[in-house]
Image (cartoon, rainbow, N blue to C red; front, top):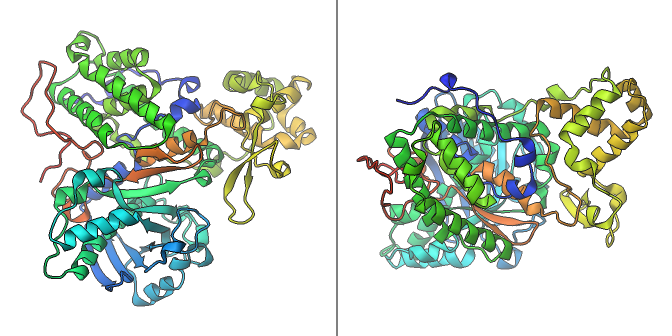
Length: 583
C-alpha cells in the first residue's frame, strides 16, 4: 500500500548552499518531474489522439505536413515544412538563415489560409512574423550522413544498424524552439490556464515530440521515393530509439538568472520530491524492484552516452564507477533503517561523485510516482506578482538577509582578476546573450546585470555605511543602482533556491553547467558539450510515438533496458520490466 504524502512527517529539504552550486547544478539528470515526461503523462491520462491529415512532401523532400493533437477540450496543429537545403547553408548556429525543416505549433485546427500564411513566414524564422494563433516556432537540420544512411538502408529493404544509430541518437537536431511571444506568437499568459499547459514549456515539449514523429515519417517517405518496390519502414524498436537532437548555446544560459522565482519553483519541486521519498518509512517489494531495474537501465544507458568533450568524458567515467558501486551495494543493507530510502541517499552522498549523487536522486524518484507526480504541475511562477520592493524595511533587515543568503558572495574580491574575467552582453546582430573577456574585448560598458554575486557584494558594502534604521526605500532613493539586487534579496527570504551560489563572471565559470541544469528539467539526455559554451543533447529518445501512446507505458522510457537485470536483493517479484513499455 502506498504511503500517502500527507501522513508523512516533514523531512528537511537539502539547503540552498548545497544544491545551488554550479558544479552540482551541472550534474543534474532528468527525473520523473522533467517536462517531457510530465507532458507524456498528461497526454496519456487524458486520452489524446493524433492524426496526420496533410502530407504533401515531394520526391525532392520539399513540402508540408500537418499533425493534429486532439485533446478533451482543444486541438493543436503541428505544421511541418521540409526544404531542399543547399549543404553550404546548413549550420547549427543561431545566425543561420535556412534549415532543412521548419515548424510551427498552431492553436486549433489549421486552415489552408493559415498554412499559406505560415509558408511565407515560418521558413524565414526570425525574418518572418507569426500571429498569436501560433504557440511555438522551431527549426531543425539533418544529421546528414546518418539520415542518408537510414534512407539507403530502408530503401534497400534492410534495417539500419542499431549500434550505428546509437552513436548519434537522432536523425535531426533542432537549433531553436521559440515560444512565449517571440516573433509575434502568443504570450504564455494566453494559454497558462489550460490544463494541458499547466507547468513550464508544455507547448514546446509537445512540439518537439511531434517533430520527432515527423522526422521518422519523413525518412521512411524518402526511402519509399528512392525505391518504391523494396523500401521498408523502420522496425518499431529501432524507430523508438531515435530521439530529436538539439544544439543549445549561450542564448539559454542567462534564463535561470533572469527568472529567479521560476528557478526556485523548479528546484523546490525537485527537492520536495526527494524529501518525500527520503521520508518514507519502508520499502515495498514493487518499489524496490522498480528501483533496481532503473539502476540497471541507467548503467546500460551509459554505453550509449558518446561525447568527445574531455571534461564530460571524465564525468561519465566517474558515473560508471558510481553506478558500479550502487550495483554492488546490497539493498538488504538498508532495510533495517527507519527510513531506508534516506539511508540509500545518505550512503550515496558519502560515497559518490556529484554526477553519481544526482543520478541517484533521479533513481530514487523513479518508483514513487504516486508520492511525487503532483509536483510536476506546480513548477511555474507568477513573477510579476513579486516585482514590488518593500521599501518600509530597514537597512539592518536587508543586511541580515544578505548575510544569511548571500554569504557565498560577500567575501569575494571582485577587483582581483580571477574573480572578474568575463562580462555578459547582448549581441547587436542577433540580440542573443554572449560572454565577453573583460581584458580582451570591448563592450563591458554594456554589461548585462548577471553578475549577481558581485552586485550583492556592492549592495552590502553601501548598506554597511548607511544608518541601520534607515528604510530601504530611502536608501534606494540615494542608490537607485541597487534596485535590482534589493528586489532579489527580498525574494530569497521566500524563495531560497532563487540564486545560483557562484560567481558568474569569474575565470572558473563554465556556462555549460547552466545549460545542463535547465536542459535536465526539460528531460534531456546524452549531454555532449561541444565547448564550455554550447552543448548537444537528445530529447524523447525511446519514448512512444503518438500511435503507440494508448498501448504503451508513457513514463518508463528515460532509461531503456537492454538486457533483463539480475536482482541482488531477496525481493524478486514477478513483474514486467519497469523500463520496457507494455505492447
